[in-house]
Every structure is written in structure tokens, then in C-alpha cells.
Image 1 (tube, helix red, strand yellow):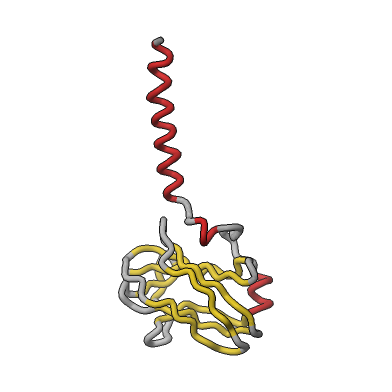
Image 2 (cartoon, helix red, strand yellow):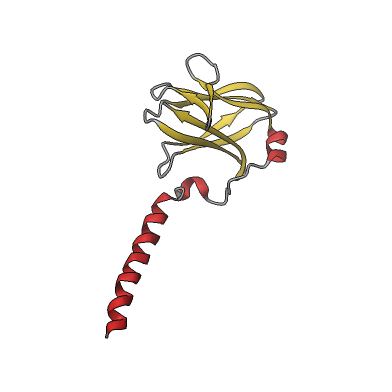
Length: 143
């Protein structure tokens, strides 16, 4: 009987730990089949350049430990030079939420894709997906 009384707290702690860890993983909408490393060959096949910028000024953020830094209330955009028409999915990820998950239609040439203001300070990453393939990670910090 004493062995059973010792196992229960261990099992309870293990199940609580697993539940807590599951909450910190990326949400499934953004991570399905994407992995963490971008496919640079796929990026090069679709784009000449891509950069996260201020939607108001078109300027990139200040260099920071986690990508570039922007003000928390600053509307953001992705400046893209596309090599052809197609679609692009931009999925902004924070620790356990997805404030933006949107698909944009592209034409050849330079264009700006509006993400909007996220509002909450923290570390984020824009995962850029083309034809179901992760082609670019754009990490950034909101201060």
C-alpha cells in the first residue's frame, strides 16, 4: 500500500509537468509541418529580398538581441521583392499565441504587406510560408 501512495504524487507531478510543457509549444496553426529552419533555396526561388519594417516609415527596426526592435504600438509590415506572382502566408508567433496569421496575394516586384500593430511587448517571429514551405523567419522584439 505504501508503494501506491508514493506513486500517485509522482504521476500527478509528471502529468502536471507535461500539461505545462504542452502550453509553451508553438500553436498548431503556425507550426504544422514547418519546422524551425527556413528553406533558403525555396526563398531564393521566390524572392529577391524580404525585410520586416515599420509600416509608417518603411524603415527597419533597431538591431536587437532577438532580430530587430520596434515600439510595441508601431504598425509593422513586410517589405518584399517578389520574383513572381503567388501567395505568401505570414504567421506571427509569440510564446503561446498567434496575433497574425494571414495569406497575401503577391505580384512580381516590390510590395509591402501590412501586419498591423501587435501592442504587447515581447519576442516574436514572423514565419513566412510559401506553398506550405517555411522560407523565412523574421525574428523581432516589441519594446
